Amino acid sequence: MANQVNYKVVEGWEQLPKGFAHRDVAGVAVDQEDRVYLMCRGENPVIIYDRDGNYKGTWGKGDFTMRTHGIYVAPNGSIFATDDGNHTVRQFTPEGKLLMTMGTLNTPSDTGYDGKTTASIQRGGPPFNRPTNVAIGAKGQIYITDGYGNARVHIFSPKGDLVRSWGEPGNGPGQFRLPHGIAVAGDGRVFVCDREIDRIQIFSPDGEFLEQWTDTQRPTHLTFDAKGNVYVTELAWHEGDYSFSLGAPVTKMRHARFSVFDPKGKLLARWGTPECTAPGSFAAPHGLALDSKNDIYVSEVTFTFAVSRGRAPADCHTFQKFALQV
Image 1: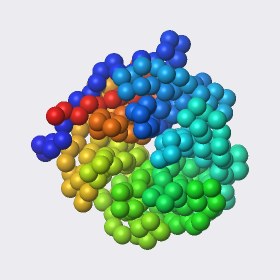
Image 2 (image 1 turned 120 degrees about the vertical axis):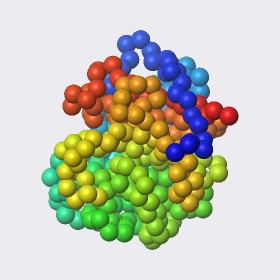
Image 3 (image 1 turned 30 degrees about the vertical axis):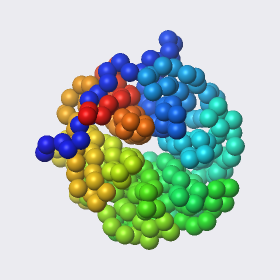
Image 4 (image 1 turned 90 degrees about the horizontal axis):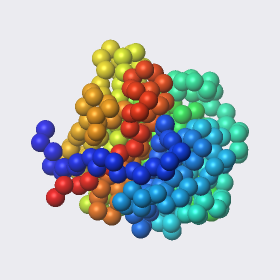
């Protein structure tokens, strides 16, 4: 297809300080001043840059497991971080001061999950069992996908009180095979990346199923621009992976990619190639964010999904910026 919106990778954007490393960048968020927050799996969990890639600071050392997952900037500027390794979602100031903890530290809810595969989940459970991502609704309600060890979306009040939950393991409407990414549209609809069954499910603000989009591949996260266009990171399928949409193991590799849809789900742009190390292509896209100029930031869990499995060299990119071409 001819892309209706065009982006170009900005090589060398990130000025990572000497001595720092991030084999996996699980999430990325951008605040109202275009500061870029990386959620990393390493000694420096949260790394902050300005819009030009200049290093501005780090925090969270010793506060996270090696399974950090998502990061989100709320409208009030506070930072929400998910840690699926200790089953919590925490709210911080932009400087890293803890404001609130949701979930019980190191205590997963009982869903029947065996700790390894989403197929083992027997029932939807309370918060949390390996939560994944956060989004804030128009009234300040906190939506959380939960996640690798659960099959639910939870709604919390702005103060962190559980309001309601929905979802259970399965392939039907309102069921999940890995609720991984979440975002709230301007009209209040809640979009959920149901990763392992190749779909984005769309719900009312209260969790009523509305529709699903299936022109997507292992969607990991999504976000919106001011026009309501939808930006989606999509993980690769590798031979032998079990696909719930196929109901069978994958027999042919399908490379990772990035897609942009209009508000009704029409594809506007898509890119990525089988050459996962090439600038602008992807090894393991996992999180994304937009800045005020609609430039895109993509985080990748490159070590977990590629390097550790012999699919990419150790120096493969883990974070990329794409500039909108006008």
